[in-house]
Length: 255
Image (tube, rainbow, N blue to C red; front, side, top):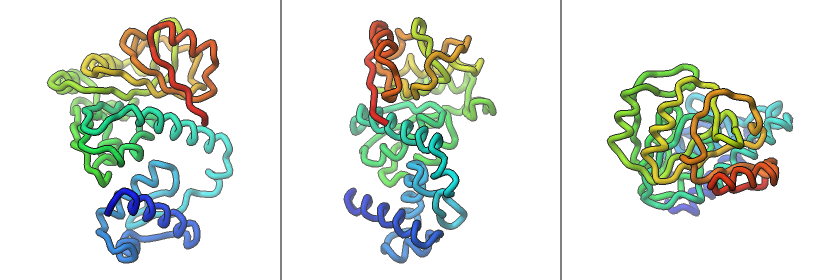
């Protein structure tokens, strides 16, 4: 099935789900005359986009209290807008790293239209979602020691695995930004982020503007390691100018 038909099928799934309240994978596979594997991939992509919630054997609509919560909606829209802009920088057959995090995970639906990707990640959640994409990018895992705080693999083994490859791009989030120094993090385990940046030709930081100005001690990536910062229109002109002065390209999206 071509890309257009895939998009049409997913649109129909969302519309039908809103009308019926719950749908099963088996039911959808029969309706659209496709495999259950394909339907599961559809549901994964749609869940990543915030359009439904997966349940065993099927899907249900997003709860109304989530939809009614304007702050939840605003954050979701920001993440999706940032992800779309960041994904526009990815070309077919690129080798990329996606670091763990909710903002970077928003990239995943946008990867469905990319061909021949090789994707390395230290996140089990991102790895599982990548396996569900219909275009089936080649998946690489860092391995290493599981860190419950970052919900990702860290440590020397992960660093060694990364150094065995070279990549076109790294997509990474941040807990905060120090306009004079670079991106910052609450996590004490940030050496893997530096190794990721060293192994990539371009480092793209994905950051929601409300993280600007947070007082966080740990410097994750100095500006010298960052090529592009993708944020939303809440990032002020002054902040954007100061980051640009550090040699970083700033992309602000409407959200």
